[in-house]
Image 1 (cartoon, helix red, strand yellow):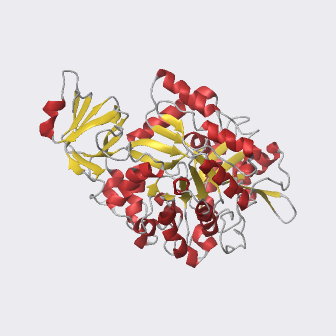
Image 2: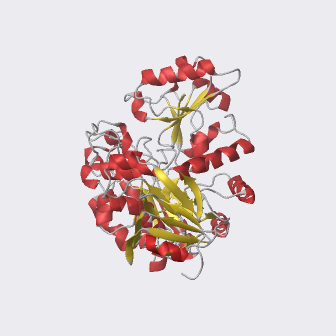
Image 3: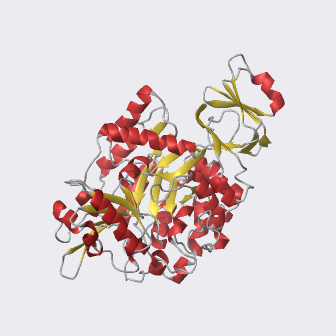
Length: 537
């Protein structure tokens, strides 16, 4: 090391995740990068008159955690209003909505989110189940999957939704046999019918909410997130505005959506957009949807679900999806594709396999992968397709399959739910994330759930497919080295070694060896992004 460090992190148990040196006790940082890794005895050689030496008091230092699937900006909109995630049945739902309606002022709406499909007790989602509790106050409730919502009767009237609609992509306004809307709006195009009448925050409020959210994320140990949307182009102006007066607490790698109907001009725009970047944000890739969700009946399955649904792709012409992915790949653009059902996963892998150039094959990721047969597991590693999964989504399923997701797909497909371990054992790159706001962004919960196959702090809950549990090291790699590999950043991120970015997370316990329930509750003692301490206790 030839230069004096800006910051030294000392007295730590360093998990480098680098094969050349797996452990250390001190790390030197200068100009946003790691310049030396060693022992506490090396500190005196790295230190200058103005070096900040941080004593980590035995904390475990790891590469900075990166959420592999998150929606910070869109999530703020989706997570607005009343949190209904604790409602387990209709009585609890009606009570919560009635309390919110009584508190509403003239002209107000009840906005809510996080509602579990299981709260309806197997009944079809219908505004008749909630309208009386709302006493005339319009309400818009996002269900937990993020792909569907329930609008009350007055809300439907305000938006002028009085019957079925035809969409260019897979979406529908669910109607009763007489053609009257039930209020159940499935997929983005259907939910967007409400946009014109829903209350909206002004830009200043959104800016402060976003910055506050990113600070809260940093406090849980996150140094970055792979952002899976860019619906509002104004977000880039907002990020640039934040960086004019300060720094983002976490790095954001943003993948704008490519939806069915995108023409050649639209694809060329997505290619050009890859040049957009700031100091800690950048456009990096393009997001596709190959299907929707199991609970909404829009996951693309090889065989119909229990309601006879799930046999259609999100792209009405799946071949058009393949052509779009190939055009982007030839331009060197990475793609990530939402694929939950087995048919959707297969089609994405088939699409990649049709690419002749191995370098172009290595540009792709599949998100979610909720159910997949044995035949598809080895194809991920063989084709170089990364798997991106969210273990805390298991919270909406039960080991006995008596939940909406499992009932919908049936026992055979439910038995192969979220096959994290099988993918890792088959040699696939496995990225872990939260899909916030579908599940909480706290990476400690995800790390623990990946090992437990149940939510932490609930030992009475039977694990879902316990054989798919990851080891502590595998889980940590899913937030660090494998996350970096999935976006081609393995030479600059995901490990602690000279030349790598100084994105670092310190835990009060060892996230690899400590009991998983303890990891979920363990303090994060320090988060460093780009050499700057963005959280410290």
